[in-house]
Image 1 (cartoon, helix red, strand yellow):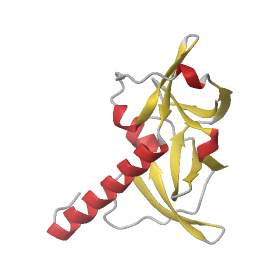
Image 2 (cartoon, one colour; image 1 turned 90 degrees about the horizontal axis):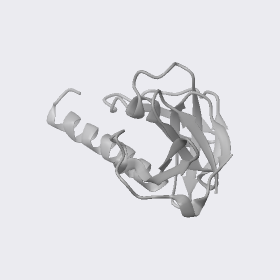
Image 3 (cartoon, helix red, strand yellow; image 1 turned 180 degrees about the vertical axis):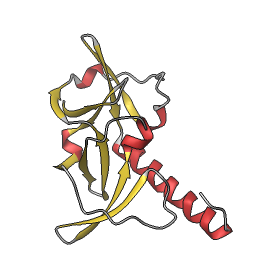
Image 4 (spheres, helix red, strand yellow; image 1 turned 180 degrees about the horizontal axis):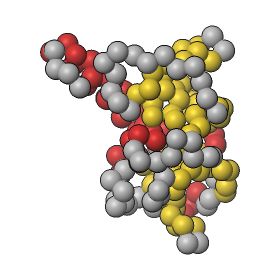
Length: 150
């Protein structure tokens, strides 16, 4: 399986190439009021409004300022994630994906992990990342309605 990988200080994360429609170096992002900290805002891409969820802040808040934006899509949804560092393409064995807890505390976002030589690759699940982003936005909206500041 071909993946795009990116590094945080301690971990290597991947998304399947089949789930990525585009990689951007930057976008003109419009922040939304009362949005959760890990939601950067929205931007336009060829006439479509895309939400930008910041995985860089979620996975490793102290990572460098360098980032790239992955446009993720499946038949039901399209959204963008900002990832730390530079994205690399690589091949991993799909039958090597293991489901297990990791020390990184990212289990609710993962499809599984792959051991490849000396490195461990954390395979992000598109549907889990999208559900997590949706949940953060709904919780932020609910807090705003109750008058609770974030």
